[in-house]
Length: 352
Image (cartoon, rainbow, N blue to C red; front, side, top):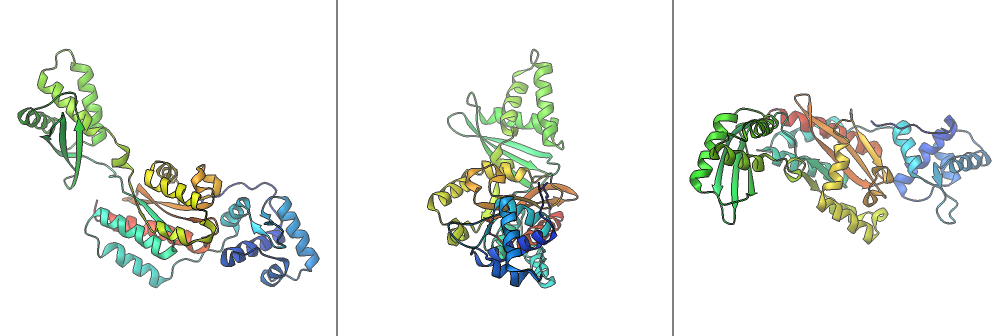
């Protein structure tokens, strides 16, 4: 789990009281007072001592008093200390893990269905929004490519990757191509590049273009032009994600601001910002947590994102996450995200 440095860390007594305060606030959603802390801490402390510790925690930015309430609530800094060093995780039970394994491995016929199932499971288990990026092929290789002419200088490219995944893309080219020209271009590309990884094919096309531009015949020039368009990386192809349960967020009091919700839902639709945040978790060695403004995106200022990468054959191919309010049950959600990532990777192993 991601950790961060904390300046001016409180002493053990203050840490224990902060832990109780965060747990009670997550549970009830109400400011926590000295009397509640005295009962929940298990320490024999006088009311005056507790008030002094609370004042110290507030001075250092870990808690704050909302309005004129006598109680306190955790700040973003308080939540960060809690999730990094104080939270007591509650892993799913053996029965829950077995149920997850069955649902991820039993019913899904293809990779997309498996990702959809994982996203729905995250949402149903946490009652928040579940999100899973579509897995990137670890070593995508070109098996076959075909082209079909459309109208208005458009061509449909049909590409088979790793002998099983079919990708379709509409290309906008500089001129119209006949069916015969497209067939010859496909034959050339299949003969030259079939079986090679897509990145290698892109490099090969570029090399041929640079090396033989002066002496290139029209067939090669056409083939390279069409193939370059068909094989150019597209964000929508490589980074799409499946989102489930976003409407759960509409029922959470902490996220009741209509403008904030609209901004968050717009972000879900655009995908780009969420994907950029998830990409930061690709290289993380386990669970990554962004609390409030730590994400760097205004739409998530009042949210937390708990993410974990998932692997196929020991290679990271995607990320899954839960998005909800900063006042979420981290002790449950962190293990759920972690376990689901591992189980999704195991289920995908047999499909890649």
